[in-house]
Image 1: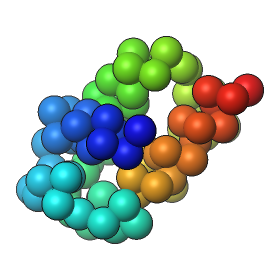
Image 2: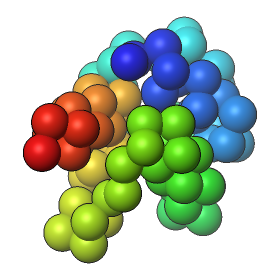
Image 3: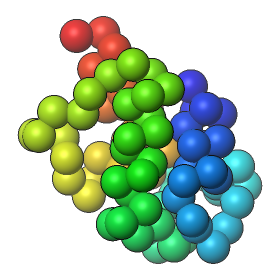
Length: 79
């Protein structure tokens, strides 16, 4: 799952660094992820994992790290 998330970040995140080269706990916003790009990442994640992010998880902390994204996706996929 982490490789898939990194691939989506690479394609849609418009970050200054390669998401494949960062630690899964690194702050993606400090690495160049913007709030606008986060929306594109979220939509791509929803399509890829066949999930929908509910309003309570639509916050900056959800998309702050690869680990936090994976945790939320995991909880939604198992719900």
